[in-house]
Length: 363
View (tube, rainbow, N blue to C red):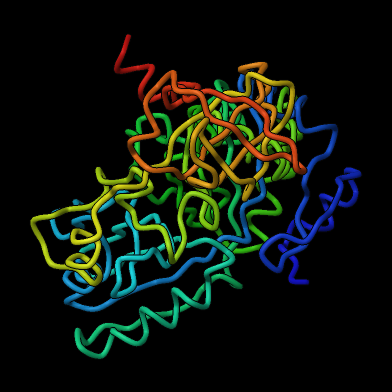
């Protein structure tokens, strides 16, 4: 298994280490529910150094990324971050990405660890047509995510300046102890927070400084990261997205610019979105897990669970499933096959828990 630069710290903290996307990663430290609740009520720190960091540079970089991904990046200002999707010719999803415009001819693409090499090869295959270069800087980069109500306060305590003025989905470079650090404000938990990129030794030092100065922090593992994102109905590649699920079927049409050409566009639009990702709540006492079969009263195997778990903030067993759109009406009863027994559930509105940027808009 590959190791992130912070693995030694995780082990010293007594973390439960598991294999994830080829990396040895902490799934929890004190417990998934406790860590989940601490992010919602205070602040937690995640090691996300397993994520892939790919640098694309050249005069036609914006045009290149526009052609390969679903969202429009050509008009992005420097410092903007955009969620986008990389599709194959038939409209299936290779990966979902965060695209950072560092400057006019240099972009950072953050991809999922499990798709690192697939994304890199896909970019490199198409790069010659646009005369751009693609570099994989994953092994030279470490990243942590500081998420929760007190995230800005935690970074301020170690000497960060200017991060709190960042708007949602933007980034900037700052100096920390004489080193240039990239800081962004996106998040995968539904709470406010920041991602910090740097060289491995810099991020190790930053992690140690955070826990020394901001004593209210807790380290958080992959287990709570999954329940936090699921409460907000954020997609996870390999679950709500895959090479056999298009962005439109995944409910991500808002990240698809239909006014520009991109690889997979025509096939995706032709296929449409007769299937959709719906949210559900278990009405029988059971937890539905990924790939469990979904049925209706009159029809078996209409779809499958993409993600399911007990969700601490909601206090319920909930999840998402890929089913025909005409079965996805809120309030409709479905059945989920759990170890050979049909358990009742009902379709509910997404997201289960409103992310912070939506809560701010509503207020």
